[in-house]
Image 1 (tube, rainbow, N blue to C red):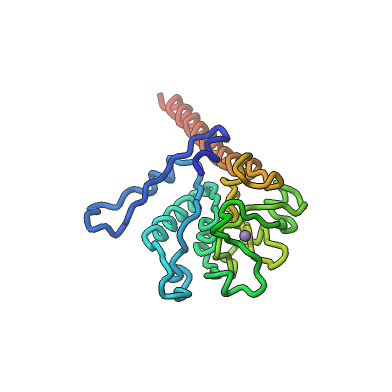
Image 2: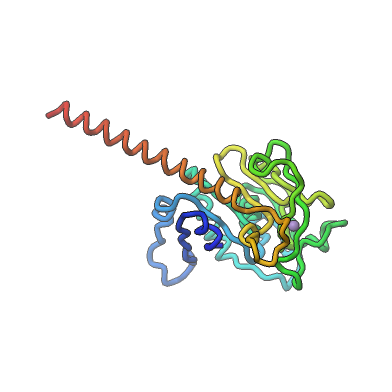
Length: 249
Ligand SMILES: [Mn+2]
């Protein structure tokens, strides 16, 4: 993931996990400082989100979760979204975006989505791919057009009911499994169910796989725009202060 991001001329800083419930935590780490220092947030894939985060019970007793990671990432999301900074959610990150805005998840596609194609294959892992369609008027269609494309698929969960303010961006054409979402009220809050970081040339993925460069560039442009706006604002404030102090002198 870091190589994919840094391959576009920027530095990716990896944010350490902080367990807010640690008994040795005498003061809460200042997450606000992190949000202030960083231009955007990429949420990567990983373990299933605990269903208590969207108000339901685990689909099976032996399912594994990491509620500490859930809490921390939700708090990070809160910070970046509150600061109007761009967020790109990958796989679990896409699902977390939906949960953050009050949506729900399908906990296990193979057992809960009749007629679903294979969205995960432990043997093929990052070489499993399927077709994806971008929705009319979607951000992804703006980036990639409306031709059906192929994307990697390494997930057994997906978005179910959309959260508040979210729109469907992409779906798998045969079973209509959601493959992308975005928030309609923020400049760039977007999630994709596939793994663009695996869409690299010579990675074993088929040659017809979706080029993930334009998606990263769209995210980085949004980050630069947000950062630039702040810088211009700061310059403006400095100029006003200069003028004010010149007048009082
Ligand atoms: Mn899929």
